[in-house]
Every structure is written in C-alpha cells, then in structure tokens.
Length: 294
Length: 223
Image (cartoon, rainbow over all chains, first blue to last red; front, side, top):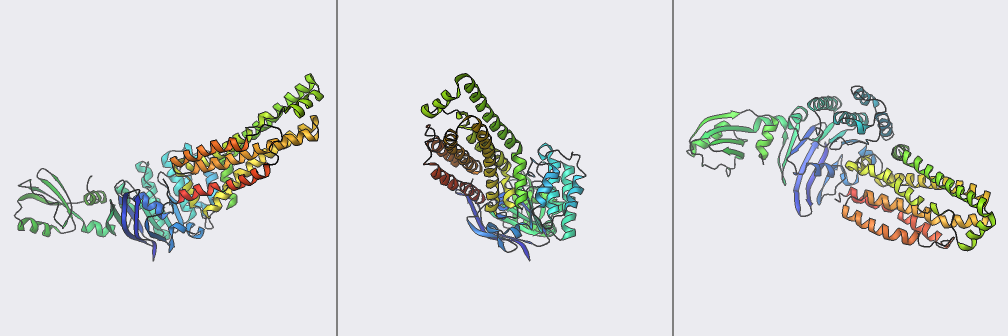
C-alpha cells in the first residue's frame, strides 16, 4: 500500500510552471529521497503534501486522504520537519515536550529524552539560544516521540555540521527500519541521502528524471570518460545519453546503457577516442550526472 | 488539546500580559493620585462641577491604553508564529485548523478582557471613594468604546500579522488606520457613545472572524 500518492500534480507560481502532471508514490515502510536542484519544486511538493499549498491541478493523497483536507487523525500519523528544524523557539526542552504531548495519543517521551540527554543544554535554556545542531535534535526527538507512521522531512541537513548530520541520519534510519516507518525527505547534501534512503525521486525543472530504488539506479546509471581525437563532436542529441559534460576533448557521458553499447556506438560512428573508462559514482555524482551541473 | 494550545499562547504572552496589566493598574493609580490632588486643592464640589458641566474627563489617560493592549497581545501572540512561517507547525497539529485559530484568538481576547476587567474594577473601586454613581457611570460608558477598540485592534492586528502577502498587509493596515479612529475615538463628549456601544460590540464580534481569513489564505499557499 502507498503511504503517499500524487497524481497529475501541476503547479505554477504566477505564470512560472513548477511542474506539470507529476506522478509519484511512496510505499509504506520505504524511505524515499526527493532530489532536485534549487527551484525544481522540492519544497513546493512538501508544502502540497502538508496542505500548505493548493496545487493548480491534480492531487496528493496521504493514507488515501487528500492532503488539502487532512483529518486530525491522519495528521497525527504524520511527523513533519520544517526546513531549518524550525520549532517553537520561545520554549525550552521541557515546555515543548509538555506542549506536544497533549496532542498525540501515542506520545512516547523516551526517545525524546534520550536524544536530549546527549545535548549539553540546561533544562531552562530556550530553543532560540541553541545551536542549529542542538535544534535539529530537539526537532527530531519530538518527531520520534510523536511516533508517526510517516515522516516528511524538508531539507533535514540544512545548517548541520557533519557530526550532527550523521547522528540525525543514523538515528532516523534505525528508527524507521526497526518500526517500519515511511519517510519522505529532501536534502541538499546528497551524500547524506545515500546512507538513508531506499528509493530516489530525482526532479528537474518541470519533470521527473528518475524514480527508482537507489540500488537499481546506482547499478544502471553509469558514467563513462574518454578523450576524443576530434574535440568538436557533439553528443548532446543522442537518445541513449542522459547527460554529457565536455571540456575541450575530454568527455563524460552519463547513460543507462552498458560500456559495450557505448563503445560500439563510438566504433559504429567512427568516433576516434582514447582512455575510455567507466567511472565509479556516488549518489551525488549520479545526481549531478543526471541533472547537469547548471 | 486545547489546554496545550492555551499553554503555548500563555508562554508567548505571559510577560507582555503581566507588564501590560501592571501599566493599566499604574495608569489608574496615576488618575486617582491626580483626583486626590485636585480634591485637596480645588475642593470636591468644584471638581465634580468641572466633570459634570464642562465635560472634563479625569480618566482621559486611559483612552489609548486598551488599543495599546490589543496591539501588544496580538504582536506577542502572532508575530512568533510568522517567524520562519512557524504557523505551519500549528496548522500541522492534529486538530482542525480553524479550531486552533479560534482557541488562539479566544485566548488573546480573554486575556485582554481580563486585563480590561482588572483595570475597570480598580478604576471603579477607587471611583466610588470620590464620585457619585452618575459620574462613574458616565466614565464607564465613555470608556466602553475604548475597550472595544482594544479588542478591534487585537483582531485587526492579528489579521495583518498572519496575512501572508505584504501587499495585503499594507492594505489591511491602511483600512485599520482609517477605520479605528473614526469609529471608536470620534466622540470626545462623556457618554456620547452610549447609543452606539451595542452596535460597536456587534461590529467587534464580526471582526473577530477576520483571523480565520488570514489562516485560510496561508493554508492555500498565498505568497
């Protein structure tokens, strides 16, 4: 069953198209990362999912309910992390725990206090005076205590140093996998996503470039490097090439095809080249390879 | 759940509320220090005469105090919700969005009414030492639109603060600046607003729904 299902989603800001007929779904128990460049519609999607934005057309369903009219019962099943770990910063860690506990029947304060015990904060210290890393732990602890079935995390890595990012991810993945939770997340730092997500949804301006299992994507999407004898050859119009980066005669091509296919293409078209090699990629390389550097 | 909402509102507003109530009490104290002074140096009968026949409003410093209160409570309550669009957290709570807005609004309105009540009671308690019933009644009738203005400013300020589009904020602010003085502070004659007070009361009740409009616009993604 799908925790999230978005059908034919179309949205504009004024006359600027964000995307048209976007379709995707998130299966229950999976961790999906939404990747895209700035302005490709990640936060727009998160806002539509949380009912803070009405799409021009189409709909998103969470557990079968339109996100524009989520019932309180359904909202209680969704943990929401706002970009920048925004919380009620005029409260301290005791006050905020007391506040949220009144809303959730399944409230379990244990994981919250376990995370808080790792922070070097005083009991009366306001959240506004905490570091970004400490605030992230407060936000995460509150979501874990809520014990939601679905977590929607908007750019969870924003402002975090590597240690806090690692702590956040490890805690989150362990929690999600041990309790069969569903996560829908975005992040600017794609190395982080690699440790966390099962599925990836890559968006470019106005369209979806890929929605796959991360393992499948990483196995099938490849980068090849070679140096051309004639640097003027243009590959950009070839159907099998997802993206090409070329500096003088040095070429990087990104494709779902195999090295055999690429080599035979070069041979068939009499394209002289040397130093042909397959380049190993991380998720970030693959993302840049698919979407381009600009 | 409503208890948790009230707890949050209390955390945001408590110091502003306490300081504002203290200012109100001090203002009333200041009025009656002046009254005591005038009684001592001008005699009570002369002072009453000036009040009854020359329209002197010995409580005049209270005129804009409720308006200040409405503004303070609205800002302390709703401004923190707009910083980093924190209102998203409130709307994500498992409670109907309009319900949470109404609880927040009722909290603010009740706080204002409570402080107005404290100020009025203190004013009344000291008034009966110095003045006959007719003078006190006239004073309270005169102050009623001022208190109603405090509530109206609270509702309008909340509407303006939560409005997601700056252009509309300016528009609402312009309307408020034109509307409030002409409707609530127009007549300076003691008791002059007596026939209009029930109408103003109904008007303020209607204005109390304005906040829901800003909340709705935010949820629809107006920007």
